Image (cartoon, rainbow, N blue to C red):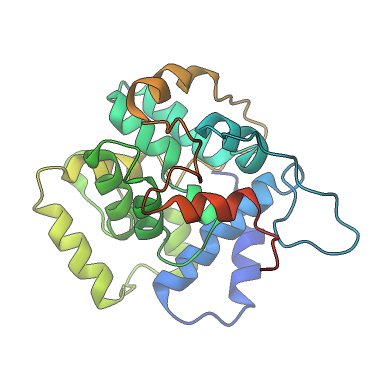
Length: 241
């Protein structure tokens, strides 16, 4: 993890007056991703002097979103690259690649739940489940698999933090689930994937996406799925009506 990036993000979050531990963690991760990628990704909230967003294809694919809306996507690409290097399954690699898409381009709070909902119609159930519960599990160490409480959380919140009750309940539920390690594996390849100057690419993951992501023929956002509206929002986030 880039120490200077963390300290700058932590200073911004500390000055924002955010109270809840989970809300502060969400804000910290959002700010770190912003600092990591802001020089290359245009802001979604348009002001008069901003360049227009690039035009999406008529039937956009997941790869189109990575090119036109998520780029440079350094954090999730670093996360997926770490998972691939560590020999994780293709489903876990895909989960690492997709785990923060909602916080990048849709919402910040409860990004695990939002991301899982957005992706559920298109990925294996195990993948969306892992994405949902990684948000809660990141607060709880598991020495048996080598996951320690993240250093950046210790510095930001202290070692004796108390997550909200719903986060505790979600983590406890996940700990006793058959897919626990899928969600835990995201946390193990997530919180330290904030390195500046690391060259990453979507290319190593194209075949994995092809095998495990159900691309609708109408294009994401236009397939009438229960979450198509979320993808349409990312296609044109500056629409006034």
